[in-house]
Length: 474
Image (tube, rainbow, N blue to C red):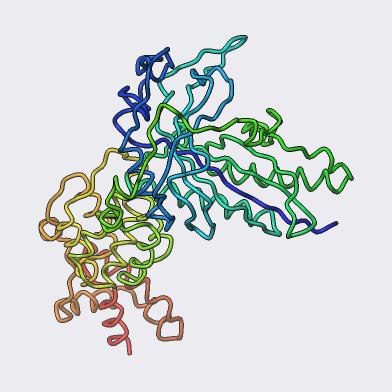
């Protein structure tokens, strides 16, 4: 089989979180279920209606640019992108072409070409035999990020890297607070430009797979499309690979042709005469905005590893769940010991999340009480069984774990002198087990440990019990 090089470039659209639409005062509400209520003469393109730029949307794009290390343009403007579809009421889309707000940048091992701003289209509702259009979404601020083309030899690798980038970008949007980026609701859509070639330095014919609305679809669609192209090339049908737009059929797990891909010349871009030119360095304090950026996922990963030494899998849980991440840090500050913090993380990512899966409305206890529980575990004052029981209790009723352990007699006995009497009793009652131990079967000692734990209703420290047994059975 001939060796092929696959090239991928991503275009990611994200609806921005603003109170109003991009060029009018209509409400920007992605949860509105009643069609065609958030509309006005501007977003419906009535004659004589003039657009006004939403400054907050511009600010949000600049934040993204600063977060990815891009260059913020001094001069920028909006252009008209001409094409005729029912979901574009004006017959053109207000977008950006030659002068985007952000140029360059880097994220998750991929270089970025540009980030620009445009207005979203209306939403087509396809029924059997006809279509309806909901214009609530028309004119919503829509940010588009375009990556540089990246070439790889392995289709699996390229699909995974593209998915990793899309996930990381979604996280950045969340951390910046500029977009909900909910893919199921269409607030973030991924498009992949894919080509293959036998020459690493030469691009093949580009195919765009549009509107991928889940990370799983991104990975599978890229992999499928590379396999499809490779198969055509191997069969000598390379000419059948044409520049086109393809969709992804989730049910059939395959791409399908939608239309021949337009080039930029087909859109007849020209500067929008109704909108003013923008001098962004004058309008925004970029240095101040940069200092006000929150800690981003990449920085958090490094800090969590350095400060807490917890597992990578746990770190990703806190990176992806911002509320749980803040809670983890609040408890960790109280504990202030790496070993205790590791125990905390284990209980949060396994016990708590497991409990929450079946009880979605459950709330975490106060950081103070959770820290107290972890301290009891770290100091071997309660057993692992007692810890799980107390944890379940404080999830239901937030109160002191020490108080619960004391009232329910769950504190482990660590007084060796007090335990010796119980250990002697169990030794006398289990002579056969004792003889087996003395004859070399050392693992049977755990049988005696279990009986002692049962005798004390689980209130002993197993490590101390083992120590006493070994001393008394010499």
